[in-house]
Length: 358
Image (cartoon, one colour):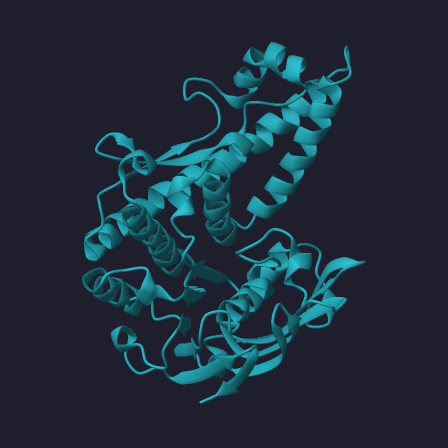
């Protein structure tokens, strides 16, 4: 899918902006604090319903304003062959929260946005995918599983509801958890298997990207959130006393992780910050290659000042790997030229929140 038109109103420092984007390489350049990254956040919001920089969407609203609006026109890459176009809008109001629409219809969940406009980002904080705990990696993994397994979103919503009900029962002494145990174990096994299969499918893409980026070799291992020797139903029984003591369900896919090891040790323990960024970028590119191979869809890719994050040699490797994706790119930079990425198809200049095509 291609983002062809973007309209932004009261998003961070950007009061009003309209961009007509190219299906290929788009460059947004300007000084520090000019609003470049804010435009990437606005694009990300259209496909995810949230920012990649903050979990509090109210922080995205321009100072002194009550709401922000982002609107986008999404064209199918094969529109000439009969693919559909969609209009996507997201509004964040300080009093009413966030609302989203696709083709004028209110969306049932944020997953509806991702179906219409899949988008991924590589930004200066990408190293946190390696450095931080499992929550960030679960979110990264589940976004891909959602696109590959049509039932995954429904499983995950129902699983979360069942876990909350089970936790409520655990906090009330003597309350029966058996009905929720069955629901949690059944849905949890489905979720875990879908994740495991995706990690397995991603392995060859990961190996190729790591080699292409001259990145430290890493092994991907999916930890499902409970012991490998037991079913989830057995794990829930085994942890019952601990669960009752704390009023929480400890075993299950909500505790899962993708463990990344290099030389037998966790990557975050042995890699430098620069190496972590390179490895995290490799994970993201491998994920996009998998989605293209399995679903035929290549998400739009947002790159926030990539030249500042990689040395000249690794940047050249990075550009070569991205070229193989053949996807829509939106790149930010401090200068109007990005020699590594070649001549952009469309250029925009941002200054003090004002955007103009060049």
